[in-house]
Length: 272
Length: 235
Image 1 (cartoon, each protein chain N blue to C red):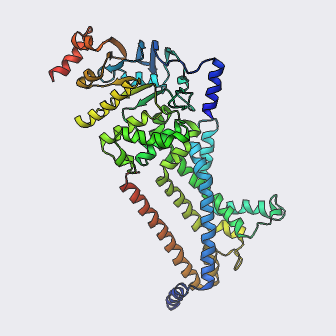
Image 2: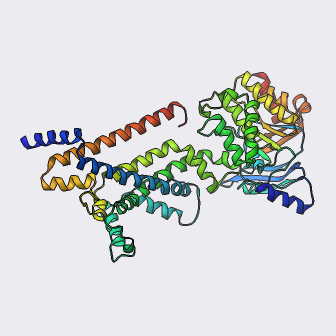
Image 3: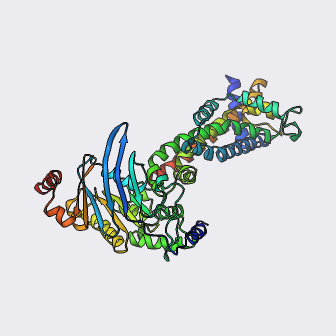
C-alpha cells in the first residue's frame, strides 16, 4: 500500500527514482540537556561513498552525533539538512517513505543504526529478522527470500531457530548488524559495533561493513579501536568535549594529526 | 472432632467417586472463571499496553483509576452489575440476571483491572528497553504494542494468573448476580459459603480441596512454563 502511495508521490514529483539521500549537512548543531551543552556547534558535511569513522575519547559526543543523524534525538539548535529529506525530524515515526529501487520497494527509513547495546527481541533469530522486515514494510512476497539472504549474510543459517538472546556475543552482534541492513539502508550508522568482541568476531563484523560499503551503502562508524579505524576509515571525524576538533582524510589524520587533542589521543593509543 | 473427621472422609468419598453435584459445580466454576480471565486478558493486555506507550492528557488519571479498581470489593462490583441487569435496570431486557453469563461479566469486571495494571507495568519496563531500537526502525507509539505484547508474553502470564486467583477466590459478585441457584448458577465458592452455613461440612470441604488443588496445579504449570522460558533465554 505504501509502495503505491510512494509511487504516485514520485510520479507527481516527475521523477523515476528518489534523489540521493546524501550529502547531509550539519550547520552549527547543538544538543543540550538541562541547559548543559553536550554537543556544541557541530558543522560537518557527510558525503556519500566514503567510509567515515568518528573517533574521540569517551564523552566526546560521538554517540549523540549518530543519534542525531538517525533522528532519535533532535538538535537543540542548528540545522540538519539532507539532500533528500526523509522525515527524520519525526524520529522516523510511523515508517517513512524509503527509496524505491529496482531491487527493493520498502518503506524502511533510509538510515539505519546499530546501537552500542543493540536490543534483540525475545524471539528466535529468524523471528528477529522477520519482525524487522515487517516493521520496515518490506513487501510480504519478498520477506522469505530476504530472510534467507540476511541469515546467509550473517552466517546464522544454523542458528535460525535459536532464541536470539542465547547467542554468543559475536553472533548477537552479527544478527544486530544484518538486522540493520534488512531494509537496504542508504546509510548505516554503527556505534562501537565490535567493542567487546574477539578478533574473529570483529573480523566478521568488519566484513559485513566492507561488503555494505562495496554495495554503495554509506558507512559512518564510531570506534575506539585504532587498528579498526585504520582498516575501515576513508575519512576521520575527531571529536572531543562535544566539538568536532578535526576532520581529515584517514591517511593524513593518522600520520599528521593537526590538533593537540587528536595527537594526544593517538599517541595514548600507540603507547599502550 | 468426630464430626470433622467424618466430614473429611465424606469429602474424600465425594471427590473419588466424582459425585455428580460436585462435578457440576466444579465445571461451572471453571467455565465462569476461565471465561472471565480470557475476556479480562482480551481487554487488559491491549489496554494496559496502550497505557504503557501512549502519552495523552488524562493518562495518569486512568492509570490511577485502573490501579484503584484492582482492589474493587467483589460485592460492590456485583451490586453495580445487579442494578444494571435487574429487571428495571437499563440492561434488564437482556434477561441476564441469575445466569452464568452475568457471573462471567461480573468476574470480568474484577479481573480486567488487575490484568490491565500488571500489563501496563510490564510493558512500560520493556518499552524503556526497546524504545530507541524500535524508533530507529520507524516503530513507535501504538504500532509498537503488538511487538511489545509478544515479547512480554511470559511476564504477562503472571498478570493473567493474578486475575485467575482473584476470580476463582471471590464469592460476593457471583453470589449477587448469579443467585446461587442449584444446578444453574452454583459455583464452588458460593456453595462452600452456603453449605457451611447449613452445616453440611463434607461438601464444603470437598469443594475447598478441589479449589486449592486447582490453584496449585495452575500455578505449577505456569511456573514450569516460565522456568523453561528462562532456560531458553527468552526472559
